[in-house]
Length: 177
Image (cartoon, rainbow, N blue to C red; front, side):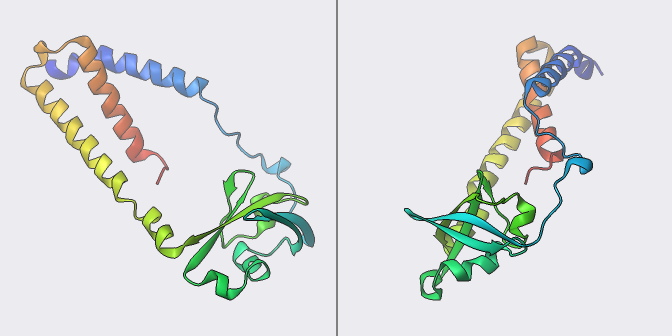
């Protein structure tokens, strides 16, 4: 019990710092349903950047990026390749209508053609798994060292231990994937 009670003040300090950080950090504004724009069907004109060229296309707002690809590229250009659409710094989902993703009339949409194997490599990024395992192992070693002789360690060590544990728990329960 003494081991746990010695972590009380470091825990309080970490929670205060985390609360202040979350208060200062800019949070994305929540969308109020009453202010959500009504989706208008019909054609919208968008400027599509392909490489160094920018062309204006009139496209139905209900079309998805997958449906638009056939207007932009020849099938021979897309062998073993995938097209990524980006508008206003946000990657568009391929299976959702462009009008629902915030693409408006005269919006600038950037396209990028990548290899399918490159896209799969990005999805199966093994380095994140290795970093997570290293983090868990380091945190476990920290806890084992602390449990062997808690009176030996300073307030700073205990605070770092609580902070790393809190970040780990936050990572597990956050919506990040």
